[in-house]
Image (cartoon, rainbow, N blue to C red; front, side, top):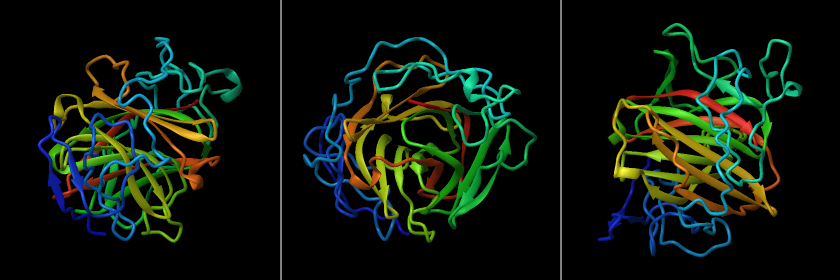
Length: 328
């Protein structure tokens, strides 16, 4: 499961990189032109793939080149409150953004008498509250071979994994296709870590498990260049579709950041959008990446969710908080 890179750096204004090892990424909505920036997680026997030169293959064709292409007006409404899975409320991400869904997924039809969503239904809200050292709330569980530990710490979900391997926590029990995800992430050492969040996820982990991993992800990577990316996993092999520089070119270790990720069916294909911003500031209106992907095995399917950490060096932890998932 090694993730080695052979990279050639180009003197571009955005310091993009093209990596030779592991599959070629389809063209996406990144801010680079000519060649795609590397995401660092290489596809080698089920690991993630380095980006090759950008092509115009049908999966991953760009929509908006990093701008909020086709985005509807921001509604300003917050995510549904009072519909948590026993763990509190998120700090809101309820605008429709023209992704084919409504502003507000709340409503009494989706909740039980206690005001929480029934297991396996959306919206899902998790604040990871609880005593330090307690396990992640059910039904979260470690999957695969490389999670070292996972626990609640300081009102967040902390987990870490072995060096140079994907360590994945899965949230089973959901069967969803089109979703809007918002979460807070804090890196112990941003320069050596990456974090991914998966939708349409089947419970597998790369090719570590008998059921090979599958789904779409957004991946925030600090270990190589400082990118946020959109990825797909099929038959246990991850491939980057598009990358964009994190605004400001960096994420500070120990500082909370918000990540938003949308996955929506559009005309038989899938629209993927993502952005990241400091949790202390307002959510930006512009999507850093906005692409279409038509990978056949990922169309017309539904699944659950997962979050993973990749440590390039060491075994530091990543912390997540204020997770909100709603239907589009």
